[in-house]
Image (cartoon, rainbow, N blue to C red; front, side, top):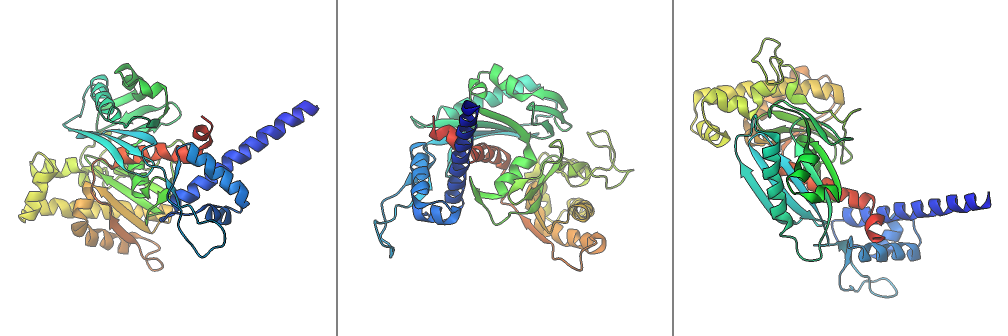
Length: 402
């Protein structure tokens, strides 16, 4: 019995240290300016000696870096500024979408060490062949790592329903893919690190929203609680609560692109009719305009093309209807448009607000804020990398004790 009690005590002590390491790391990363050991102690309620020992561990683990001491009004030795470590631990974010693929290698400060992109039309593309091309992109950016850099995680963003427990893409209507084990395909294509480091697959809108919700890994942005809509060929969405993606019971929440706008509307790739993305998705807009890509559609809008403007009007009204339904269900007051949707926010704003004024039940009591994220087709890849680095902050002991 005595031995059992000792083992339980050791486990508890180890767990306490791991939790405190994460607490200290997250405080340092949340701060917009460098902090000192005494700030860590004051913010976390630890003793100064405990906080200092934990910071020493974070520094030796390559998670936190120290700068030259600065003079302060405090008594004692000068404070040593602490900040996220640069170029020590990195995460690889990969993305396959309908019109592009992206790879981003990001360090703990949020700096992009290297990047690779490929544009194309990937509807119906062979999953193994496309995964092989993505693996080559991943290899390209990994080979650009400075010597001594450690790879912490690989994350893949995909446009569809993802089973995060098995890392299987269950269904991606706009790619015409079903039951794709992305990790296996990448590993078979030569990206062997998939089987060696923390690996995961996630929905592309969830990844993009996580990126929008952070100025850098571990540092929340001005957008902390919001409903995010990602516009590409289709439309995805994600709900962030306190900087975390609300995934739902199975991780499938956010398929707003398949909310019904009209049951008799145009046929969607999902098999239903009248889905939101058949009105406001990029694929629908360029199809109706008879152009090849969103840049051509933008040119038509800028030239005042009547049909293009009518399409935007229809898209804005459809977005307003879908968002009214979503806000009534979710009790959210901030909406962020990303991807191609952000390009037309000035046109969409009055149309969305008109529908909200009519359909949003709480309109008399709240002000709904509608904003646009900076357009970046690689936002899902960046968010994927950020989520991988977030695991480092959640479990820094893995790296401090390595």
